[in-house]
Length: 153
Image (tube, rainbow, N blue to C red; front, side, top):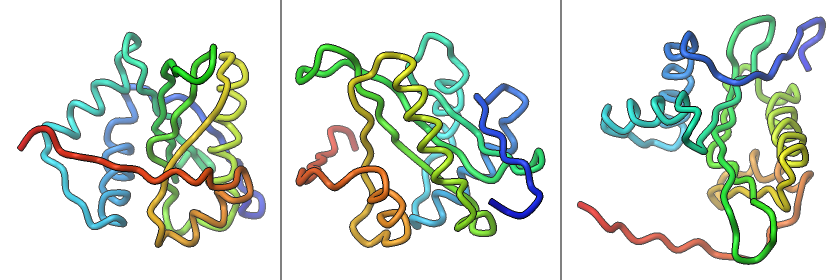
């Protein structure tokens, strides 16, 4: 962690929309992606909806948002208790290498354990070497290959 800095990880609140949108834009730019604003709006609405399983944890250093984890739990046909799926993880370039990503994953591990989840899982692009180095510290790749087919135009 950055010397003398205080890292806090907390649930997102409605007041965090501007900060999340800025981090989300950086995340999308990292992957060279653009989403329709309606999708971004719907994602934020889901994050704030207590009835929806999608949740957002914000990482702040000295009160400044520097990263997030976007996650949800879901039932599985392979285990008796839910799985926790880490859908997206992002840390700003300036905060990388200081333990923020590691802390965000450890935070979700603790949440998953507290909720009685059987497993936590995530995916990343094969070429994302920096993320894979971090992820390898938590778990080994499980040999699965993802397939995705678009169902709507």
